[in-house]
Length: 271
Image (cartoon, rainbow, N blue to C red; front, side, top):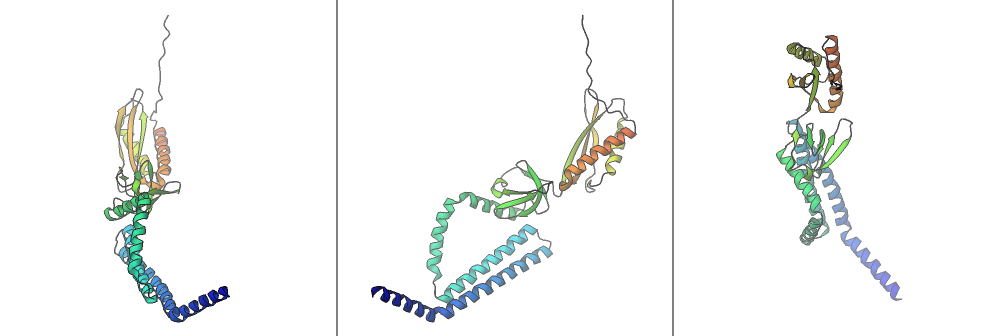
């Protein structure tokens, strides 16, 4: 009998709750989904407006995301209030939980703080070529917790932002420097060799037009005059252009009968 009474009491409570709060619950659900849709729309609109104004893509995405989260927060408060739930104790509880969670996930929070710093200070933007901690690639996305690079092998590299902020960062925008060295015989005409190399560089597809190639005598070796070559090329084609340059320069020197010596050693037999 006691079990039946308890079941009846529970049933009566549920029925009373459904009758009293059914409309409020349905209203809260409608408010949430409508608000969620509006937040998404406004977030996308803000992002697109900033991109159309030629504002950095990373900053545009961040601002659009912040607008979306802010609107969602307001919508949730309104929905809870519609059901009759006071948000003040909830906010206090979330604050206490957030403090404890913050102490437990300091590393993750450091990544978010570093990501915020990157977005605000903009040491690099999407499309730039950067090198940090021995890793190089084109910036594909800058998120709050991490940055994604794409290297020449089309591999996506995810770097935690706390490993980027405070480190020595090489940013070469869209292009990357290619440095080559080739030696020719001391009997060669230096000016003629420079002209041959420059002409060979002009035949290679992918060499940047924004920065002129630099060619000159770099050092004097035991068996050769060594020429240094500095050329800029898109980071995503670094090795492709590098190999093409080596082949073009070698063929040009061969066609013009420029001697490329190899190290020689003289051995004497003493009695």
